[in-house]
Length: 202
Image 1 (cartoon, helix red, strand yellow):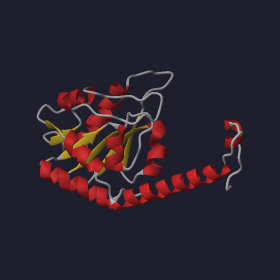
Image 2 (image 1 turned 135 degrees about the vertical axis):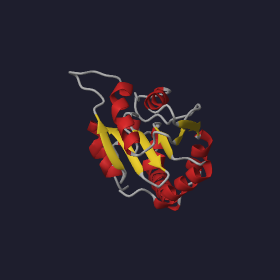
Image 3 (image 1 turned 135 degrees about the horizontal axis):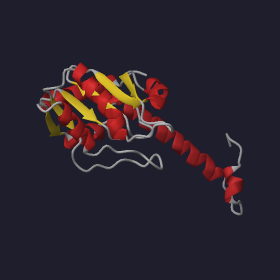
Image 4 (image 1 turned 120 degrees about the horizontal axis):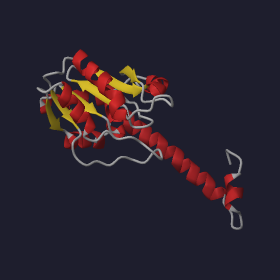
């Protein structure tokens, strides 16, 4: 699936305004914003470069899902196995620094999430790198400059693209049709289980 071209252009424009060489984000909503991929366990990391390049570090068991969700360049890492348990931070350190070196970011000005943020609850458990991602970058590349771009990211998320608005309208229309149908089907005396078991297309 191709990345929303309007969204892509807006991100590049924001980076130009902020004078950034790259954006590196790990929060699920930010990874979705930058790549079109919604991470399963929250351990994926998006790297968006000033020239418009889009990369995602994904756990190996999420590769197929990511490939079907985004046209970003994917780099996989092993988040851990039963025979070799490790933390997400340890698992991603080497692949992350290798990707940044490949993208010539060793002396870059990089925008990252640094302040408090809110993530929608989608799974019972998700991982969060917190400050570990910054520590990994600074440990590998002492000359990089890391700047907070939380406000700019929030503005990007708040302003919807044409495609996003079309999807929101379509979703709202489906929900409205569902409410209309069930309003006509629900009758006094019906139990919840009976309502749930009503056939489709009433």
